[in-house]
Image (cartoon, rainbow, N blue to C red; front, side, top):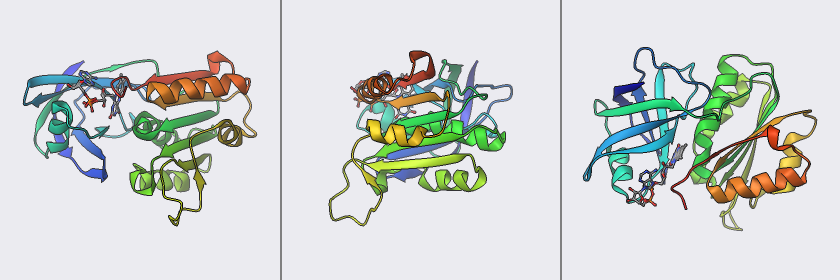
Length: 233
Ligand SMILES: Cc1cc2nc3c(=O)[nH]c(=O)nc-3n(C[C@H](O)[C@H](O)[C@H](O)COP(=O)(O)OP(=O)(O)OC[C@H]3O[C@@H](n4cnc5c(N)ncnc54)[C@H](O)[C@@H]3O)c2cc1C
């Protein structure tokens, strides 16, 4: 479906992540959580980027989150204000939560977007499956959707979050885990869950590295789902 949509809200959620909510067009359906083409008017004319939806299909709006940069599309995205118009084309893709099996969500940076949507979906639908989110951010300020994720852990007793910070200074007050996602963290997150499905999202480097670690841990390829945010090198 291709539809014009109007902006409802357009906040900066971390120093480098911008979030936009749009009105949901009547009849727009998607699975948790696919992606859309999002076309914006830029200085170079209309440009469409593939963007994961950053919310559950149970929500009454469409949400997207992007890491800002100096490209014309990103500048246009960051400048959107309530009432502005854009065009969505979708939804597409096979990166969809299996509602019948435990899920380990693995997010690198802005790769959190569809995984937040999956966690919202599980809470809204009161799915009885365990869901563990492993979320790597540069530092505390760059943890996008931190309060939303905390709220989801309160709402859903089956949902847990494992944060790790990759670039936080040694002397920062952070007492949690530091460093990149590694095999130890993946094992800890999946402890006690039989036949879990993995959903990995981020840059191609993060996705490839996580797939390699999961295979070494004995996870079958048929249990590993991934979405690569091409365009981030
Ligand atoms: C399925 C899917 C889902 C995605 N979901 C998200 C998401 O939720 N959040 C997010 O931040 N990113 C997402 N991306 C990546 C996004 O589409 C961009 O490629 C990425 O954000 C980098 O854009 P940039 O303009 O900052 O890149 P830059 O490196 O600044 O761009 C350099 C040049 O390449 C062009 N360019 C870069 N990417 C694209 C593109 N995709 N299409 C056309 N031209 C491009 C730019 O216009 C610019 O001229 C997703 C990608 C895919 C494939």
